[in-house]
Image 1 (tube, rainbow, N blue to C red):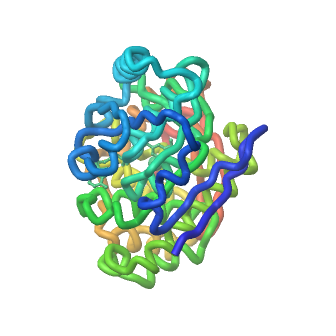
Image 2: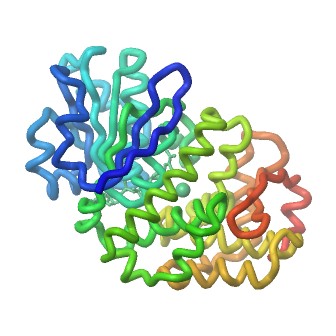
Length: 343
Ligand SMILES: NC(=O)c1ccc[n+]([C@@H]2O[C@H](COP(=O)([O-])OP(=O)(O)OC[C@H]3O[C@@H](n4cnc5c(N)ncnc54)[C@H](O)[C@@H]3O)[C@@H](O)[C@H]2O)c1
Ligand SMILES: [Zn+2]
């Protein structure tokens, strides 16, 4: 079964996110007659050669350390060598690293080429490939360089997740639970009602959860494409998650989000926005899905990393706090308030 979610774009046709058995129809989503250049990584190329080798393709390195301007610059050179021009369509096939880099390269090369994605990790399907934020890190600062520019389409074929390592699958679930906590209580409750095994093997259940997580993001992006307000809610759990990622290499992004969201649930309970029982439900759900709920890093160290991360901005940090389960709000905290924070 196929489901389509339209994400509104300023001044253009909506960006279509297609969920379901769709990879065999890839050709039909590409603009007829256009030259297509694929950007992917070596892992995905190895597993999905028969799809990727149909097109001219460029490979990038693996992991967050390759999400840099050096990688971008190499891709510009390679596109130039291939004589890519504004009629070339760029197709990113991969996880969030590939889609973030591809979206940025396609948005800036010759002032912008049309592009689309085949999202191959759960995290990319429900989060990274949707909504048009793209970009790279700069000197260890996450996503410092980038644009807002949505792809023409995102294909989310769940069968591609069969080859995804279990840990990466769980990391994707972390962002889906986060989406439920932001705006879909029923989605959050799905994770209380079903086991990790069921999400891994029950395609109908997984598709329902993926669709709802994408819908949460699509609704928010439609209201606030350029992150002037409401879109900040999508950063639930990410303030601490980024501090954890800065302090330790032990966790995948989604795992850091799980820990960061549990910390925010505790903070929200402390501030009286949710009950202690609700905070405990959040912790239990992440634990049920086999995700870490504690980084083992001291809070003071995380706060130091968090302040360092924000040093180029004002003297306050926006936290997304929970207001019950399935609703949240953004609240700035001054550095002084953060320094005296306890959880
Ligand atoms: N732009 C956004 O809105 C947004 C949102 C969330 C996250 N992100 C970014 O996404 C990135 C993380 O993305 P990710 O978790 O997808 O990581 P990733 O792209 O590194 O993929 C994880 C690993 O899985 C491999 N892989 C991908 N698909 C596979 C498949 N089908 N089978 C087997 N292996 C496969 C990759 O080669 C990689 O080794 C971070 O840089 C994060 O900042 C961006
Ligand atoms: Zn994230």
